[in-house]
Length: 113
Length: 114
Image 1 (cartoon, chains in turn cyan, blue):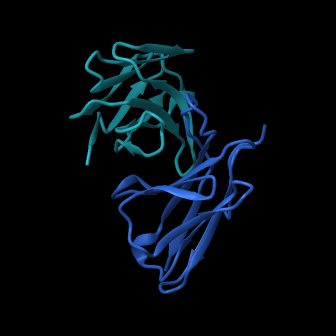
Image 2 (cartoon, each protein chain N blue to C red):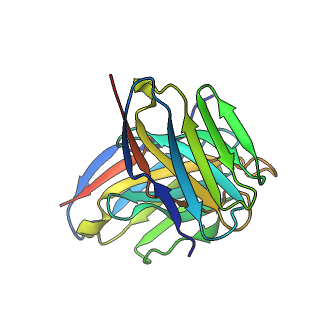
């Protein structure tokens, strides 16, 4: 089965600093999804990438999918305490319909004042 | 527009018992998926239902089952509970229409097995 490697596993950054989280697959991805989770709660959708080289931004978060569609990065600019949480990448390995997603192990982000 | 609603939010069971969890998808969404999240295994796909039919199934034992009703509401059942079944169970829905591929998750049902 396809594994998704996320790095780093955890991250502590000072408020105002930039950070990047990576998600890597050994196989081509048909769809790559980024979610954020507060501890013990549901997942909040951030962005979906499907095309090689695609880049999307929302507020201070930018996600990119490389040309080969095997690696994605999530970049947060000028981090704020509200950005704290667990970031998960999820991949659709077959149909591109989100029918069955494989998730990475998550990156726990703490933002200090 | 109401989100995905899961009930109950928390429950405690003992080994050997069974449990039923409920999920009401976003109005108009026909696809419901279930995921299990544990500290050790992370977030894992259980199954997906679309128009009352199971379309995909993850690698879980037969003790885990589900169903979907004509109004798209879904239930999952775990029989003969084991300690390892303690987890956050997440339900997600999507419309199922072509091009609409984003999963919207509920807040989850946290199951503790003693």
